[in-house]
Amino acid sequence: MSHTPSLQHEANTYFAVTISNDGPYSHDPTTLALAHPALLYISQIGELKDAHLLATPKQENVDDVVLAALRKDEGVTSVEVQFPKQRVKRDEF
Image (tube, rainbow, N blue to C red):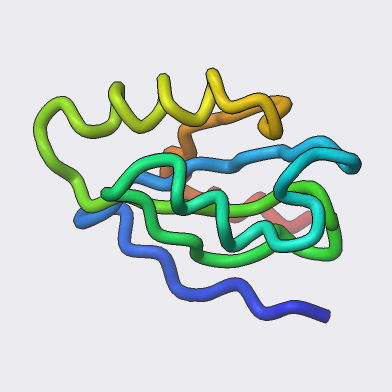
């Protein structure tokens, strides 16, 4: 089981990136970070071989540029910006 690192949403913007199984990143997904100088490879998402988490430091206008660079990359099938969600505890009966 892989360990998910602690995420700092106040300081970084996170991108969930899905890659094609036969694309250029299938053998070394860490090279996804080369799509833009501000990108940092964080980890594989769970046990999903084609889903990976990348981050950029929060800076004005960088997120849109990075998102566009990832979306036009031929080895990337989808990109989603990750937002923190507050978990709610359900009432117990």
